[in-house]
Image (tube, rainbow, N blue to C red):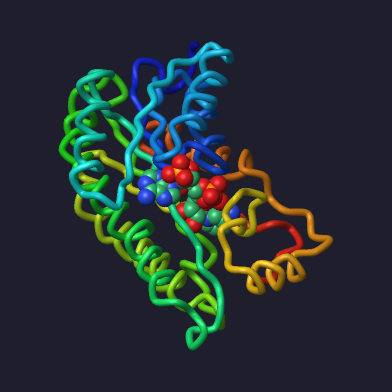
Length: 254
Ligand code: NDP
């Protein structure tokens, strides 16, 4: 499949559903061989099947990124199987919502483990490969895209720890961007508004209904809308660095 990412390799975490799935398919359409990472193997196989049916190349990587060894081994597996690593999309994440006083500590811990620690483990393992790709690839550029949220820019009651993780992702992205930009590894952040995915299906009873009421009747973003933003960033010429894209649903005030 010919495209801007021909002969490159991409890794998308959390590619078994939602934004990650759509992003993996979009990057494959641009010609990248795409490693789809997540814990649900069957769902990953389905996504890989769709990519192959669309003429692309996909490689399934079953891993839990909250386990540092699994995250590191997953990145190594991608490089040994597909030969290199040019693009990483840190998309895997979870959201817990509710008043702090009512929230189970485990919910807070899960957000830190997946949205922060998991993202760091993947990034740490991937960086040397991205630096190499920026040096030796025909495009002479590599990309790390972190999926944050509007919650990475705007704190609101009921999302304190989700805000903590996503504000953290934004800060980490900006600092790392400045560290590696001279080496032509572009580090960017995408901040989606409310997207129609499985994310809210993991919310606690009571909280989930409150969120559903908040967005009732609203036309939500689709995963493809965010995949478009990621695809735009990573397909630019090496002279262009799109550092940040905020994509809200049209009717969304927050
Ligand atoms: P989904 O629940 O559909 O996707 C989450 C993905 O993360 C799944 O593929 C899941 O795969 C993966 N994942 C979760 N935990 C782990 C883990 N420990 N190891 C590896 N993979 C893991 O939701 P979205 O597509 O909506 O979410 C994707 C990202 O977008 C998240 O970072 C989220 O915070 C962000 N976002 C979403 C918004 C929305 O409105 N939907 C708005 C703003 C940001 P598996 O279960 O197979 O491991």
